[in-house]
Length: 101
Image (cartoon, rainbow, N blue to C red; front, side, top):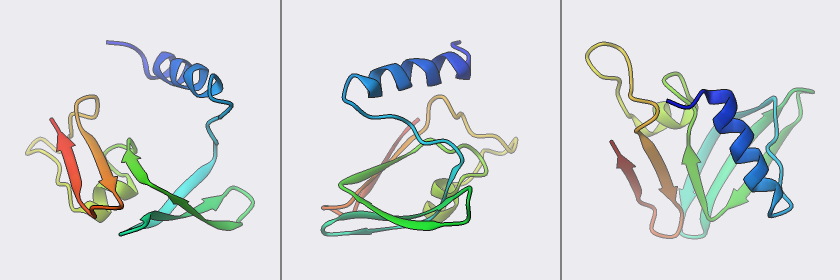
């Protein structure tokens, strides 16, 4: 298994090849899917809220995350999810969602 810190480092390196960077200390408050994409409300560490629009949203926020709760994805009987094997994608244009386990 690859440690989370290494996974994050690799992801950040890959994002940088596209001129992008991961934002830290930003909390997803809620999201809404529509025919045009996914609208997300995020809270910055300075208390500022921002609405972010995108074509899709990938939930990688763990057992206590907003994505899992808002989609109604339950935990397993032992109170855990297989966080390395569950991927939740909210696809705005179709309004659908998919999971992989």
